[in-house]
Length: 479
Image 1 (cartoon, rainbow, N blue to C red):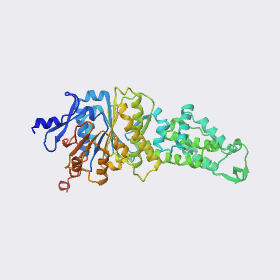
Image 2 (image 1 turned 60 degrees about the horizontal axis):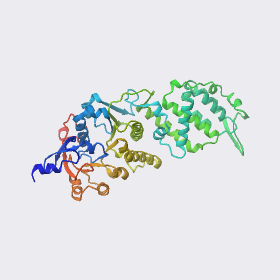
Image 3 (image 1 turned 120 degrees about the horizontal axis):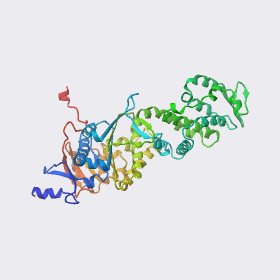
Image 4 (image 1 turned 180 degrees about the horizontal axis):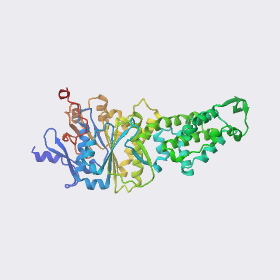
């Protein structure tokens, strides 16, 4: 066959003058291969391959070529967010610096961190709080719903709520857990008098006999909240200065006071909600280092956002992508989706989309997967598209894999991965699938709705100053 005839096979459906970008050459014939912008980027994309197979280069090449081809028009209409687990994609940011923001989130450093900005109205949302603190669906999520509703209802004022809670806590229906729960927030409410307040509270003990469950002090039993509070002068005189509290301190105080109030009124079981409060206390230290809550002002975001999670702990690496996906999907749906598109690019996607994880509860895992499954099923209608790159496609939820439209398959040798390809990709023939385990570095089988037939492409390697920082170390030179 002539080169012209072979090129005709590699010319894709659509208008003759439709926009295309060059990504490499056909492996066998060495003919340049252009992929269609319309058909690839308005679809969900999967880039899979073992470590060292050229996966990161393909991801960087596809998007670098897109931005270079018609960047000004693209950036007026579309937003691209890269979730970068290993900090590899700074070179793309450097190339398009005027249109781009690069955030290096760090849960190790105390000061001077880059932070993800979230508006107050978005933060005080029960859905978002459920994501942040992995709340269970039937008990903890309703508790957060009430917390968010009370905050909207009463605003930033906490003093009245605090003193009202004390009255109810020492009322007719006392519970033994309430004093220890209250102690946990004394250092936030009144740091100057923490020692004195703890000394006052430690004088109270729990007495339980039949129906007579009460706190008592030095063998003295009290009948009214006023009698109890008369022996807690430092606590009663405390005023909560909301301006000195961060958003995360506020949420701990609000949740703790609400727990005391709800337990005292028998609205909730202490055992059901206390894990949520513990989770808040353990998570906020890390989250404060990477998230900044800002007033509801109109931001001027740049169309390219890179979020590096290289220096984050494992918990934050799972939480931040969920947070970004949740907020961006809800916000994008509010826009005129016929005129705007949103592209979420997740490298090393097995870190967040894995079905098998022993480090987290089933409820949290289900919530995480359901969120991304909803986005990948419904996103296309709203102009919201996901690109995922992973070394282990078999670890990713089959629902997500089955919804991907176009695949770039680098070398994969694991049997489970190959079996998944056989079951999930209908337009991948046996001969192309047989090549996947023996592909050279940088070569991939391309298949999907944008292509007539599966093709084997050698993706062009980006120059060193633009390539992702994921090369294998050259030990010969190094040593």
